[in-house]
Image (cartoon, rainbow, N blue to C red; front, side, top):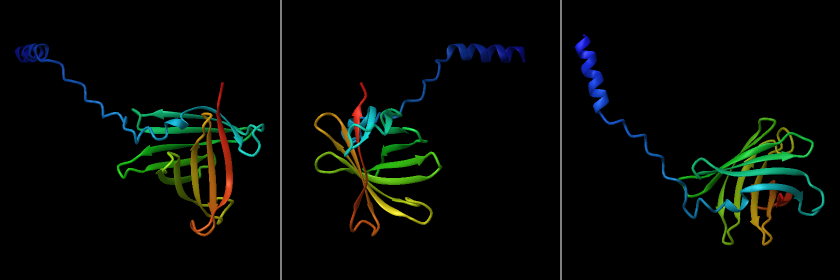
Length: 172
């Protein structure tokens, strides 16, 4: 038995250490970078009232560049956040999670101008039983700001009305 343990120890010392597992490829494609203009630290204002700050938001690119996460921190009330990723189907997928436990799934991608457009079904949008189809567009503005326009449809996308219109300005 002592000889067997001594041989095993000698074999272990002579054997090279196993290589660590290879990291998955980073998500470095142009398609993965399509949402990078939203990454940063932001102060958020209603587009129609640019002096009235309503929230702060931290947008990060995470997980080897494969995801974009928002931490939404509104002034004076609980927040929420989203996790966005480019999936195998070539589209961006977002899961929004509110501080009340509600979740909404959105799907979309860049339009011809490079803005990200996503749509999803928001159950209980204005309360129990009041569901809406929502289209969100993230516009990259010339001054480096980002506008998020949320349009609401009561007829499954045939017509839309503005539900919210926010401008994200980089924090100094």
